[in-house]
Image (tube, rainbow, N blue to C red; front, side):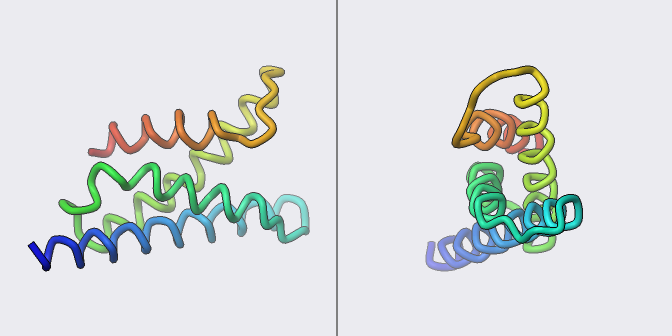
Length: 106
C-alpha cells in the first residue's frame, strides 16, 4: 500500500505541474503576458484529469495527461467565451471538460 501512495503522489504532482506549465506557456505565447490565473487553473485542470487514474498509470503517462488537461482547459474556456456563457472562475472548463477528459483517458 505504501508504494501505491507514493505513485499517486508523484503522478498527481507531475500531472498538475505539467498542466499548469502548459496553460501558462500557451497563454503567454498568445498574449505576451504571464497569467497567474491561467497557471493556477491549469494546475487544477491537471489534478481533475488525473484523479481517477493516478494510481494506475506510469509517470510519463501522467505528464501526457497533464499536457492534455492544460490544452483541454484552455480550449473549453475559449469555447465558453465564444458561446457567450458567463463563467468567471472557469469552473466549468476545469471540472466538466477536464473531468470528461479524465474519464475518457481512464
